View 1 (cartoon, rainbow, N blue to C red):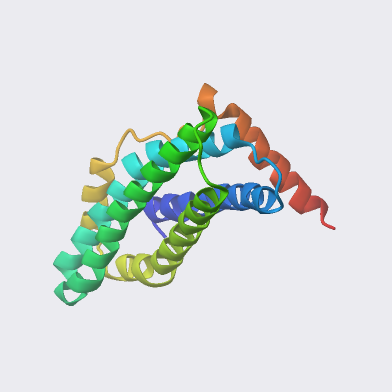
View 2: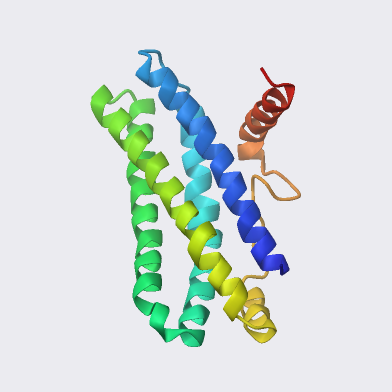
Length: 188
């Protein structure tokens, strides 16, 4: 497996860890308690910065190369590229909603719950499709020159949360992830 594919698979695992945290906050919310809206906002800020600005554009490059290698995949890949746009719009809507909650705007609990669930489910479905269908196809069909072209286009994209240096605004979130991993390792 090449370095870029390793990075994409790692990104998906990292995104799933954030979806688990969001789901935990949704569980708190559905129980009638107040979730940590600040933490949710921080997660959404990350989704707007890294996946929307770096991860998805990188995948888009891979999928466009894949269409060149296998034009029969155009319809399926066009659908996947459209999902990236939908995810970006959904993330913005969710981030705006949480921002409004933090500003004490009147937002119905039903609206918060529905958008939270839609975000989590849509992201998970998208990641599953990429992992099960599209990334394996790309790995099988793209050659070394294709991967080199894509890698050059993606140079200098540092992950502000999971990269070698966690940016200040994501330090609390990084600790939440570490705590979640330690709890999982400890077992029941």
